[in-house]
Image (cartoon, rainbow, N blue to C red; front, side, top):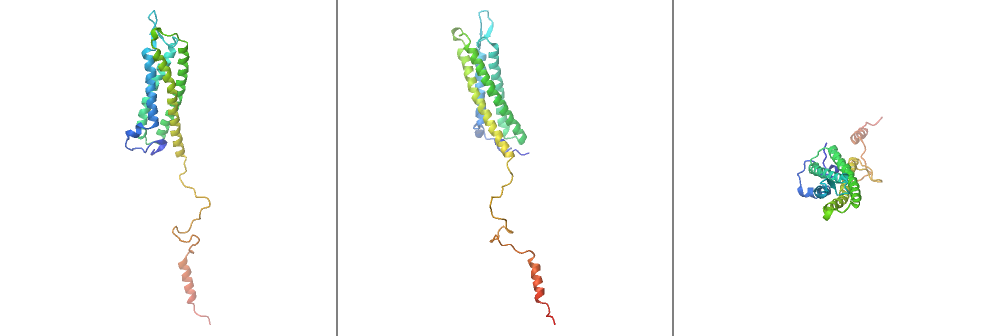
Length: 226
């Protein structure tokens, strides 16, 4: 099945254009989500933990290990997903099957919407834990944990925007699938003529003109009756 132009993509088999590729809203937003995810899990992994007096490591988010694990986990999974979706965007133009494009768009829509929600949950969770935390000695890791919270907040909008563009792409493909394949006649338009190039639309040639002409000729040459 030819997927040329389906779901907002170009025709299958068209040459790859790197300029138009990097200008796609989906690619730009996925790159932004990728950057934010690196900042989130990188900030927590590097200075989100500290050792207490006994040498035991604890999370700076109110000593809640689940908070640190949540931030790192959501960041790593978002990083891997962004790489996968960027590869999918690169291959999107080569997908000749409309069903394959549809499944990819639905996967993008579902994951982006879910991750926007999870980033919102993470932002609320980490913010609440940090507000209950004591200030670390010498301000160790404060910028990192606050930065992770800030970029979780930014990630909400980047993933929500990605979901919105995926929905628009899905809607475009659905509208194209159910579009009529014919053009309706205009209301009150002129009727059809017997010949397309006839100068007079009301004129129609009588059927079998040659046969009627022969009958008239036979009548003219009949012998007179005595």
